[in-house]
Length: 261
Ligand SMILES: Nc1ncnc2c1ncn2[C@@H]1O[C@H](COP(=O)(O)OP(=O)(O)OP(=O)(O)O)[C@@H](O)[C@H]1O
Ligand SMILES: [Mg+2]
Image (tube, rainbow, N blue to C red; front, top):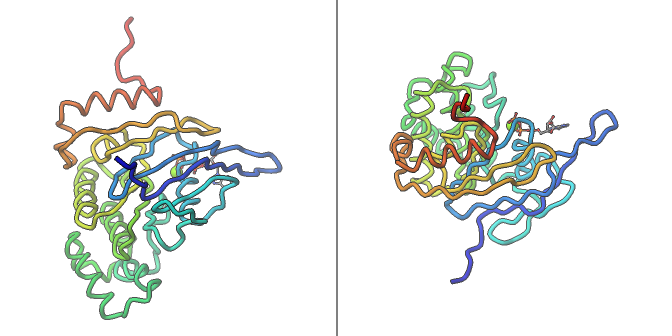
């Protein structure tokens, strides 16, 4: 069988930052790839360069070296072609919910009436009908994350980059939004890369997990997650769930069992 071409691949990605005249090597030759319609989680210690990888893919930063390919074709970056849900500064505080959601469609020059209709439909689906004229500061954390997720999905990019989208939320809201995300991804056939600190989120949502080392960062391990159940709670109830969870904790040197006295 012919090997399938990944939807997105990064090969030999390198990046150092200059800080006060000294060079800080961050990415030290990273290879990451995700199949079309795939769901990849990237985990690794804080400061190892996960957001940097996303910023490079999205064209906000230039790599020192490395190749980015989409469907097997080398590209400089994916500026304007990915849905990027950033780790911080999710919503513009001076724009209402509706105006925030419409942003992606304004950039794509979708006619206003059509854009509003699409936005209202998304807001309805995500339980935000009635909040379209509210400002972000008046919403709960979970509602703000939903607005940001809608803004990422509405311009219909093939590839989603999600940088810790649920890290600030309580567990119940997180489980709910993970379900919302999985449904959206399956309905709209997206290819997803998710950065998360949460190992159980990585196992529950992904088909593949890439583990990064500390700086200077390389890929430490790649896992395939063979769990059929695709709902956040169903996946966590699978007998194999804790096996993957412990293996990934081990990769990150997190102790999950009490040491013998
Ligand atoms: N624009 C920049 N200029 C200088 N240094 C930077 C810049 N962006 C990131 N860095 C440095 O690069 C390293 C990696 O940062 P990055 O934000 O990519 O880490 P991360 O893996 O996303 O961390 P976290 O899990 O805490 O979000 C850090 O040491 C950070 O200080
Ligand atoms: Mg980060």
